Amino acid sequence: MVISLITPATEGALLVPYPATLDVPYELVEHVAWLLHERRLACNTRWRKLGCFKQALLALVHLRKNETFSQLGAGFGISQATAWRYVDETLDVLAGWAPGLHEALTGLGEGDHVIVDGTLIAIDRVRADEPYYSMKHRRHGMNVQVITRPDGVPLWFSRATPGRTHDLTAARAHGIVQACLTRQILVLADRAYQGAGATVRTPYYRHHEQPEHYQQFNRDHARLRAPGERAFAQLKSWRILRRARCSTRRIGTIVQAVHTLLTCNYSG
Image (cartoon, rainbow, N blue to C red; front, side):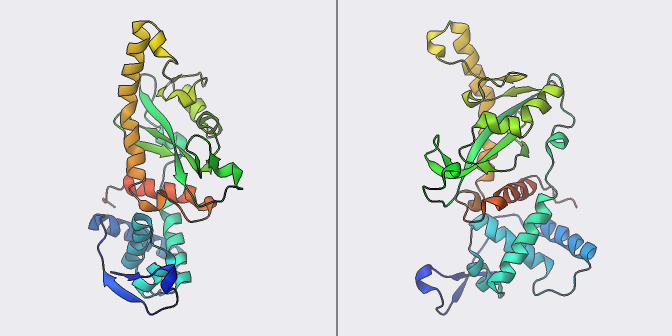
């Protein structure tokens, strides 16, 4: 695989390809290739410029390294428009395998607990785009909610909403609070979810002014909730989600696609 060396200053200039590597398991590329192969069979797709393996590699480079479509096209010997279509198709295929909320909670019930948290996916927007500006993070972005197991393994990622959406508002809108209440699943969350009620447990405010057992509760709560941060660390190890340059409508699809990649077992 080669990726071109291109910058805005050299746009239109002679492209010089160079060898590069991708830090993902070979089995993951094969797994994605098989999913694409099944998609092509279902659609009765004719010959294409790139085979399934190369298309899978193309999409993973875009997700993992946040390469532009012009760089991808030059590296794989296709046009920029074709690179966009191939990546877009792969994202849809992967996102289709991501579990829905109720599917993710299957098998959980009374006596189990999960961790719920939110993060901001940074985007390129101007100050006038107020709905996307998060006062908490002081930057533009999209709000994504996650439900994880107690050990931090992600069970479900939500669709992306504008960055100014409060975490509690987002959790209610996505149905997280109600879904966990229905199954009597205990939810551990930070202070942003204060007032959620139901089965949601949050830390006490001003715990230093409270009796010792309040302070102990907050310490235990923080210890149990800490593994939830691993889910976002894994999510943002894919550089495209550190600062997305795409349409805000595609960020949710990208998150779902990455979730599928995080949970692939390569057994298919």
